[in-house]
Length: 439
Ligand code: 5AD
Ligand code: SF4
Image 1 (cartoon, rainbow, N blue to C red):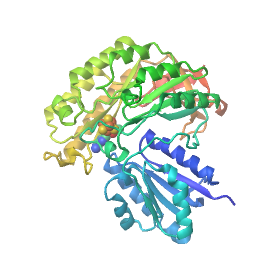
Image 2: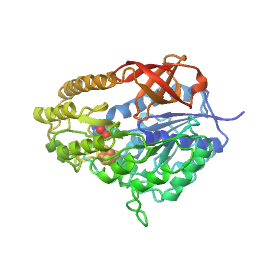
Image 3: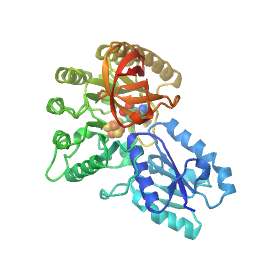
């Protein structure tokens, strides 16, 4: 009987994409997908360490597998992803979870077959972590979750070193993929039935700067926009420092590039932005949003905000609230600052008490939720074009899809529409989702 694999993925789209490659590698080795964790011969945790919460979740779930491993000693339990790239974490895992057989990092997914073979042959745990990506490996196998949408890496790593962020340490230095590989991959995906691509990079705006000869992100978008059969192009994540007018103008002229701008603000206070090493001011950010709205009037704008960064005063926090009220984002991901060992901010002296951070988060969420609801409510009665992603988790009769502006739309409809574009009339807009009916 075929051996089965089960992958649990934590964190961001980059990890989701890595898990697709891990699945591809395992299937090439002859493994098949396990519908349930308990049936698997290999269980992999692809981890995240952006906030402490993400790490704790992994460790407790890994702990729960102790009994399963005791029952089935041949079961391979592995931990990979960002968490293990941190200093001394592999040792910590060995101590806290001796039933883990395999630890490997974010730069050596291609070594997986070799590591599994060694575990099987020697019956000893294997650990392999590289500190940085030597060279981009092209052409690794990939198993996509859905046939009509695909994630495409355009850069790996990050060079920004925002002072709170662990990503540059666990994902290494920024590297861009060669333009022709990306274009070819997207062409192949479209030939395979893909209609929407999501371009992935920690800072997509700096794509291509180090290539020989250099290429711009705008140029990449133009090349992809020309691919026949492709319908939608999304990208994550942008950096407000590197998002310029030229790029906005280019995007406004490219029909397939979605009018959705995710621009992580992080803080509305200049003092805090500087301590975060974000490289822009609130004035620059405001101007950026105004320019986006000028050239792309239909744009939705979303953001990420951290509350309780070291030294954040009531006044700094009020600056964030004021800017949020002024700019009126469609939605915001809001986070409590989490000190990450090894980052400059973790060593700053004026850490904010958790109770203060929690109160600020609540206050910010309340302000933003009202804005999100008001913006969505204005869409009541409108007809929007939706790419149907699948059934709603709660109700199999309800379909879920997204607009070009990345709004989540729920409506009753048959499963046959999954992967298709449909028109939906919005009848009941809410804060996070909008309900409607098929036209
Ligand atoms: N604490 C809280 N939030 C963080 N983010 C990144 N690092 C931290 C941290 N240490 C948030 C940022 C980023 C998003 C992906 O996660 O807002 O944009
Ligand atoms: Fe982290 Fe800043 Fe890089 Fe984003 S841009 S991954 S927040 S260091």
